[in-house]
Image (tube, rainbow, N blue to C red; front, top):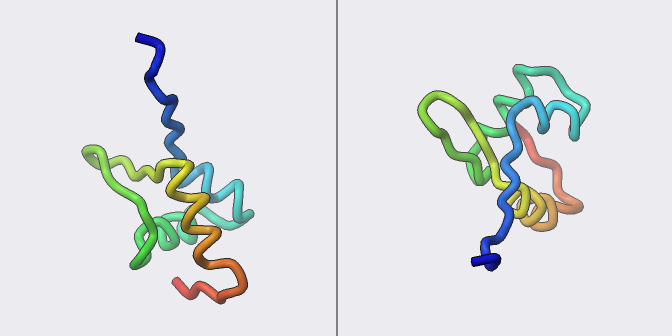
Length: 65
């Protein structure tokens, strides 16, 4: 009907690219407490809008994973 909102899902590879970190660290970030990731079967994802909100909530903080 034209009212469908486009959802963009980020993968660990996207997180790796955004944070310029290794594969293992991207999984650690995505599996950390408070990070809005979810699984579909064995694949890990985070919705881009949720990721942006997570970034905004953690600005100025040190996030340790």
